[in-house]
Length: 266
Ligand SMILES: NC(=O)C1=CN([C@@H]2O[C@H](COP(=O)(O)OP(=O)(O)OC[C@H]3O[C@@H](n4cnc5c(N)ncnc54)[C@H](O)[C@@H]3O)[C@@H](O)[C@H]2O)C=CC1
Ligand SMILES: O=C([O-])CC(=O)C(=O)O
Image 1: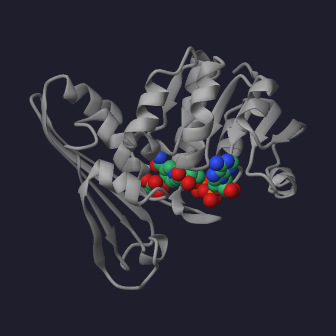
Image 2: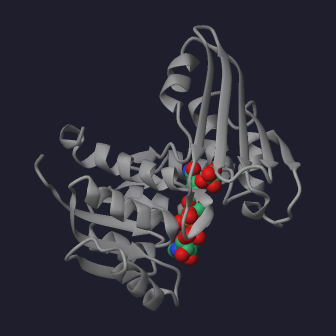
């Protein structure tokens, strides 16, 4: 496999960003330059965190504003931060022609953010599949007509806002409501909505379950061509158990597909 030198841009340098850096490096991509956007005041923390990634020699630039990240001219940017970061950074990145992968997909449940990103370009937007699987099957089935899509997310109570220890169904409603109400926990609901029946017709149940040690994501759908059911049991990220490690791997995979589709390891 040929190793490609990559100038990677990242927004955020928490649990998911660390998985992205490690996954790309393990896949044989040499990250020769890393430009990272963090919140103002977090620059020193970012330098410390990034030094722990062990991704080899890398020219590191830490910035706090989208214009500065654009000026770095990364090959591609992975957003691993928050729905706020999608709103403030992604339209200008796309307008500057920079290909961008987003993890905080729930931002698109906000109609104003959706409209701003839908009309932004010429940079290409990639929506990471995140902590779940089966989007390709759902997207294909959509072409035959979908009549129902249900997403159920189950995590330990400590991984939901408010904590607690008991079993509870903490939310039942549309993907739009879920993504806006649980910005750190229901991005998967948004990704399922975009692949299937949209934000208002995708049904979501979110469950705090003390019997769970992992983060469990289930999608079921009824379509003209098939009935589908997908289940993913994701290990929590060591430094942020709310986030499944798979979500970071999905951002890394979207970056790989974008920058070197022919070079992926098998
Ligand atoms: N699509 C999916 O399946 C999933 C998506 N997510 C999204 O990914 C995000 C990152 O997850 P983790 O790395 O686990 O969180 P984390 O809390 O470990 O790290 C996020 C980092 O981003 C920074 N950040 C937040 N907003 C920012 C902004 N506007 N500008 C610059 N930096 C900013 C924070 O200060 C923090 O250091 C979550 O907040 C969530 O929105 C998380 C899990 C799954
Ligand atoms: O990582 C996960 O398990 C899912 C998650 O937080 C989200 O959908 O935002």
